[in-house]
Length: 143
Ligand SMILES: [Zn+2]
Ligand SMILES: [Zn+2]
Image (cartoon, rainbow, N blue to C red):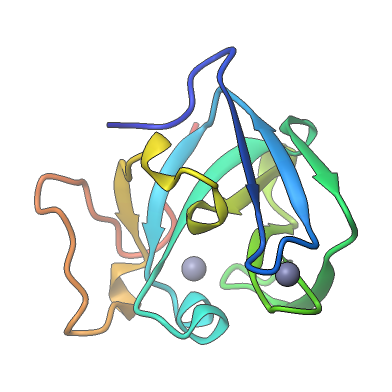
């Protein structure tokens, strides 16, 4: 279980195939995010995100974007396919220039496994998580 390791690459894309990407390891974290915005943006109980540095993502095609204000006041931009609506990644005013890839957009999502659950304060009662994973009320503290 865990994220992408150094030297590992993974391909992904949207549902219709108009947008494709290559992702280079290592990933910084893999989390299940239960925040309200992820619920609304995906129509599900949570989204699974892979944190990487911006430079580790190579996009083919230009995603549509939607920007709003995040939990900590900074802007958050969601990148998705304008044709099929498939979510690809999220960027924003985040420390360290990192972005969050939507794990379900990988061609092989089993390449990774969640390492933590974040924003449990917003989690819906019917969502279920591996009890072995560390859980955080909001963002996972990092150093
Ligand atoms: Zn698409
Ligand atoms: Zn979220």
